[in-house]
Length: 151
Image (cartoon, rainbow, N blue to C red):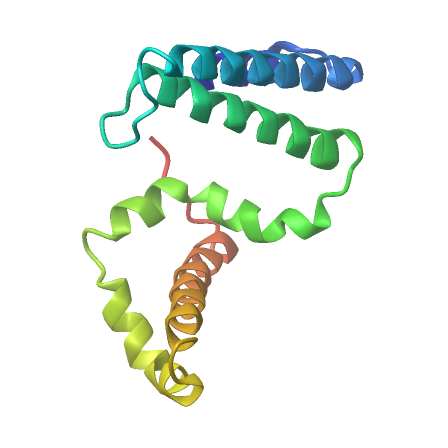
């Protein structure tokens, strides 16, 4: 599904961007419908990664891709997406870094006081945002240095 989406976007000439959005949206809707029908005999199950689960997730992803492709590439509203661009430019690095860097320890070292200041029950939410902020700061540093892990 990812290859299909990437090839569709890559191989379509720029002026026909709305065609890409329409094709992605229709494909996404079809995948969701097929997943729901298939769910009647073969349940959607995340833990087992059943085929209907894959189609359901693929359909939702294609609908989101169509939406963001329309907003960012066709309409040109891309300033707000910088946060996600920084993550996307080094997504493999941040994924692999979890095996080498203890992000929870790093987050607690810098922001444990903030979680304690907020107190229960909101300290968990605050610490999750701090966790994301620490990871994003690392990715932003890599982005500014133009260091990107490619596979």
